[in-house]
Each structure stands twice: as structure tokens, then as C-alpha cells.
Image 1 (tube, protein in one colour):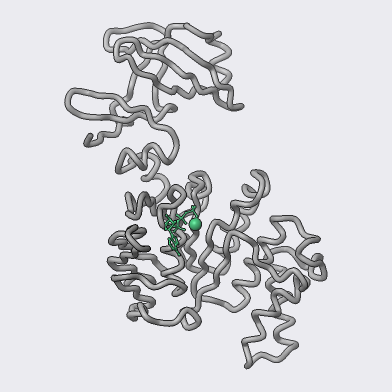
Image 2 (tube, rainbow, N blue to C red):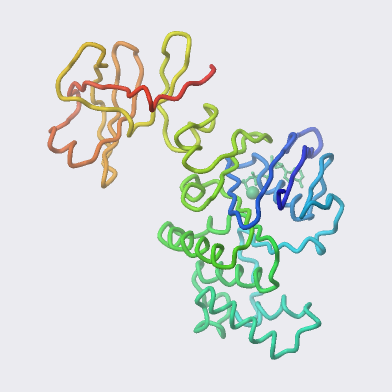
Length: 327
Ligand SMILES: Nc1ncnc2c1ncn2[C@@H]1O[C@H](COP(=O)(O)OP(=O)(O)OP(=O)(O)O)[C@@H](O)[C@H]1O
Ligand SMILES: [Mg+2]
């Protein structure tokens, strides 16, 4: 039985349908990412799950109980939003204690201990007396997470918690949040529009576009077998080509570049070399199809092959890596 079940949720704002027939099940202890472009309905869905917004139709089951009309305060969710939303006039410690005040059964010594445990968990003990403005973005976000989990919620809802941070801090916090989530085993739903974030962090990814779910699967399946052209294009890069009646897709790193031409190989001309560090993305033109392909090769190989603009390449598309799409 699912821990959290969302059934046929539909939501309109005026004439606009923001969520159309959304269905999903979330298992205990899972970290699920809701991934999609700006405006596709991610935050609205999260707010409906949290009880901060009501759906026009559909149901939400929490622990098998119909909780569609359960007030937000009774849903036992910890929530962290994109903007840090810490109280600026309170220290880190006071911010965390603030939430704990509603736990009337705890003594103030117990609250203090709980807050310290939380700060330990997110590695902020030494900053406990600082005010938010004295913290880095990553530290502020860790404080917000500590505050959310201090109340031992059953679920953690994160709405783009890392989007305001720079790339290095984001990457570090991704790993930290994931490790923390595993450690306390909290069922987590995280909204993001960053595909890399979803691929590295999620047990499963829910890809949304335009008010609907396009695919739900683990990161490996989403990347290797994207169910629609939208998913293929939104996550990573996909080259599309026609084969008979069918439309097919191949990832840039799956294309084989061979040294000697054989019948059936595809001829391509190098148009641009985009150095990306460990690998180089080759922008190529295929005269026969009059189409463009991206090809990713290890940079070392590109150097060894002395590739440059207008070099002719011979390509093979391994059948097992080609994905088929209905047009
Ligand atoms: N209270 C509201 N009233 C009217 N329209 C709204 C309201 N909240 C959201 N919308 C509209 O609903 C759509 C989905 O908004 P939502 O915030 O869920 O998108 P999102 O996927 O979270 O986008 P982003 O990645 O930019 O945060 C948008 O077109 C938005 O303008
Ligand atoms: Mg949003």
C-alpha cells in the first residue's frame, strides 16, 4: 500500500487548467522529484499535497486515509520553500526553537536538546548564534531544513530548495540533503526544474509538462527510455531522426564514431567543437538527411583524432540505444 496517494487531481485558476488529472503514489522513505519547466504546475501540486491549496477535484490519501479535506496543520508535513523564509531577527538556534514551541509536551530543556540535535544533523552547531544575514545561502537553506525536520514530520516537502544557490554549493547540498534524507528515512517530495538535480537525487522522477505528468520512473529509465519527445528533450540532449515511418532518438554519447567508413555508416561533417572538460560535444551536419546531430566524445579522443571544422566523421547508431517515438 502506498504511503501517499494522489488520485485524479485537477486544478484550475480561472480559465487556465494548471493540473489535469494528476495521479501518483509515493512509497514510504522514498525521495521523489517533481521535475518540469517553469509554470507547469509543480508548486501548485506541492501546495495541494501540503493542504495549502485545494484541488477542484480528486483525492489525496495519506497513510490510506482520505485526507483530501484535512487541514494543513494536521497533515504532519515539513515544508521548505525556495526563498529561505527564516526569521531575520532570530538567530539560527531561535529559528529552530520557534517551531518547537508548538510542542507543548516538551520542556524547554528538551526543546533545546532537540534543536541542538538538528543543528548537529545539518552541521551548523558552530553557527547557532548567528543571524540569517550572517550565513551563506547554503547555511540558510540548511537552517530551514533543520527547522522543518525538527518537528519530526512524516513527510518533507521541498520546493526548489537549492535554486538560489551557486553551482558548487548546490552540488554539495544535493549530496548532503540526500544523505540526511536516507539517514532519517523521511519520505520526501522535492520540486525542481533542474534535471541534473533530479537525476542525482531522486529514487523516482515525476516529469511534468503543461499541467500533466509525462512520465514517472527511476532516473536510469527516464534517461535511457524517455517515454515522450518532451521528456527526451527536457532531460539531457536527444538527437531525433526518421527511420522509415518511425521517429527515433539517440543520445549524443551513444553514437559511435568509427575510423573507417563501411556501408551503412552515416557521414557527418564537424561544424563546431564545444569543449566541456572531460568530454567534447561535436555539433555535426549530416548532408544526406540534411539534419544536425550532437555527438559527445571524450576530449582526449577528439584531440587524438585531430578533429576540426569540416572534418568528415563516420557514425554508427547502435540499435539497442535508439529509442522509438510516435510522431
Ligand atoms: N494563485 C494563483 N492564481 C492564478 N494563477 C496561478 C496561481 N498560482 C499559480 N498560478 C498559475 O498556475 C501555473 C502553474 O504555477 P506553478 O507555480 O504551479 O508553476 P511551477 O511549475 O511551480 O513553476 P516555477 O518552476 O516557475 O516555480 C502558472 O501559469 C501560474 O501563473
Ligand atoms: Mg514553483
